[in-house]
Figure 1 (cartoon, rainbow, N blue to C red):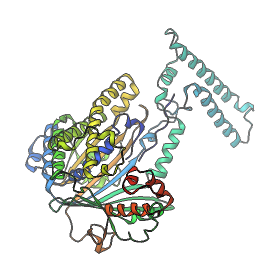
Figure 2 (figure 1 turned 90 degrees about the horizontal axis):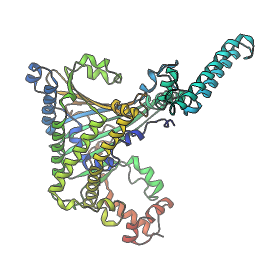
Figure 3 (figure 1 turned 120 degrees about the horizontal axis):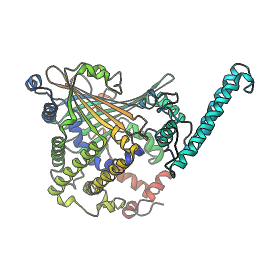
Figure 4 (figure 1 turned 30 degrees about the vertical axis):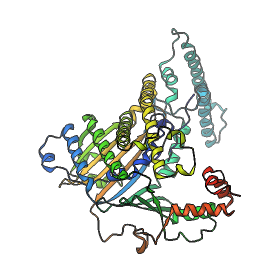
Length: 545
């Protein structure tokens, strides 16, 4: 039976991808989110003498890129990121005529012949109606005969194909043999239509961007994330300012985006208290070991360096900037100009299997370093206690223990998942082709002075069938010097550009006050239902009436 059509998930996940990637990584990845920012934006110089004089071999490309990425870790810069999603590959090169790439008429193979005949007959009826004629007139005798003969030929071939599975001496016409043998890998006409509608009405009008500054010596990083939807009769935009206080371990989110939701569902007394305010989320409440944050960052860099060193040299090469426009699938038109202006480009390409292995190795190194440095955080039973909502399970230390337990669980099952997935893929041509076609490509562009000006990542979500093309995600991140003239958050008032005690809400204090409010019998119906089922609330404050 043909698998159901894949529709984009939001960065975006897929059922096929889930069979390759470990589901726990979203949770485990939260542990290193702050640290990843340190390399998510890159601005450094490439060794000009080596780049200019050395032969542009894969070995030189890998070495030069490693040196560049390591040098950038203590530099400050401004960045701008743009993310685009496209599924145009799924329908752009489909030949709608009857050939190996043509979409099939039916989802189910045993209905193919009948559905194909019915669609062809409906097309002939439409043709007759446009000519104001009856389909049964002699003018259409020949065409009706052709449709009838094709139908009988198809049904005979299908019956022969079914019987050939039990009798090797039965022959099936080559066209139908190929068609039925690979039927599950074919898209349907409805699939193509849905892909075109998704592209036209969702993906093309959608744009996702982020901009900000990174200042490691000042312990500061910012991000203004935005999502825009621009169609002919509809334009909307949503922005979310984010401020990271790396020195004190605090994350600040702009409260306006959450105020209405919170007021409607939980806090009916909120009013306008959150207007023009930040929400302060303390990563460390004082329960984590001293120096934990610094050690986490060191482990992050150590894992990156080790996995980079272990990467096959064949993944790296130099690309002539003027050939970027000819890459297939094509790069987004509005991203391409900045990339074409480069003096030099280094490329790295990883298969889905290689990228998964990189992730597993990275998490293993981080886990081993952190567990050796802080054995008290390694708690074997933590994975079983993730669902336990007792009050003492929500300290920073307890959450880190749970995340480390998830990483350990993912490590234990990760290698088995890879081996099982690849073993099955080798047995099934479709799955093997699917994994082989899904890959991640990274491009790094340098100017004539050797400065890294941009980084581009192209990821492909594995398609559901071997014959189908993959959905593509393109992320372009550009780097520049920090300008004192430009506001970090141009959409916010001057007095709230930097969070402080007077313009922010401490979420730990607010959370305690809100629970007490419910303990006193107040709150919304939704809030009472949510808080009432939490054991930690009953244990700490007593049952909510």
